[in-house]
Image 1: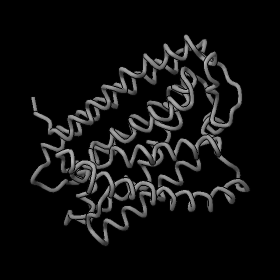
Image 2 (image 1 turned 90 degrees about the vertical axis):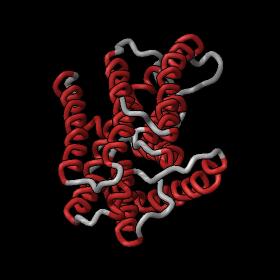
Image 3 (image 1 turned 120 degrees about the horizontal axis):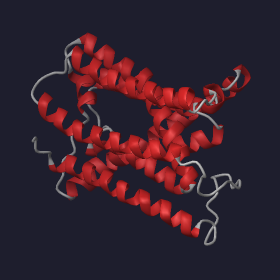
Image 4 (image 1 turned 180 degrees about the horizontal axis):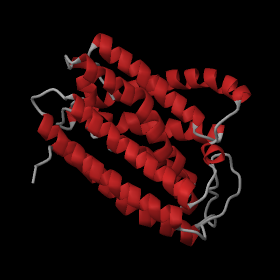
Length: 285
């Protein structure tokens, strides 16, 4: 069995805490619900408490365990690639795994649950797209300030004071330093096209609504945001990407769909990738 680093062990501990928090959150909402305090949506609209149909929640728990396995594998893969550059096959394998997970989720929603994906994803018409486009730019700039500000604070002040030296995510380091232009191009394609669609469908499109249905919006927001930060497999990105996850949930709630979060996520990754390509490794999230 491959030993994990102390930094990666923190990520595993964070995910383990989330797994313990989930049943506690479900039970607390079931027992107390809105008797203590109203925990409706961010907009205060009334909504049902514990759902009568637990299918989505069961599938969500299964996905959370799958993502926990992904965190474990990130540590193992990090050990395997230490000292060598990633190859095309490494990037293809990573993208393939994400796409398979995404297609499996879409099959569940459309094929088994018979949900109309256009309405479920909240895809806007052309007139609404014209409104969302400038908002995505503004939201992305704000996200950049928050994420990179948190990254600088955590990775230059907080983690070093605790005895940790967080390293950049492997895929980020490869984009900045890998001499193979084909690999770097594939990484950009994965980061700017595949990841925004897959991760937003998974986290904001499915996990967040499923958990919100069984608990409440604040719990589901924090849970999915922290999980989003952890699954990227780097201590350096845990807090900054969790904050990004919160902002993406707010965008999802405000816009009532995935179009705005996907656009923000894609723009954020485009700007980050461009910076890495031209300037090398910054204090990265």
